[in-house]
Image (cartoon, rainbow, N blue to C red):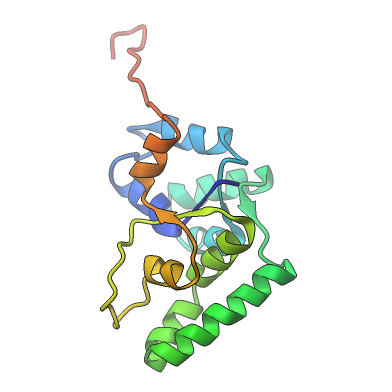
Length: 167
């Protein structure tokens, strides 16, 4: 895959710009572009913890290879390096929170598979209360971007079509 999406991309899409009832084309496009875009199983697990249509969507596409496995030894090795970096450079509770989620797995997977990590988090070199994906991507030389830039780079267009009823 070329782009590996963070949980916050799905959550923000559902809550704002691409809600299922407003822009179903976004969600159809994600599944249609499996191989170009995707995510990882730990992100699936985070989405599955919700109790809404995002959980339903994630469970529906689980078998489509959209969510990649992270058990490959190379991914495990990079994850270990990321974990060491987090423990050595952040307060224990901040490192623990980061390491308990999908973020370090996302970065490790992207590093090993030469993917661009897609997140709504922004690089902030002085952040200490939360470990940000772009900050770790910078340290481990992993490319990252936001959802809107990814969509522009892939020349995605969601076009409004009127229904035959004029609705």
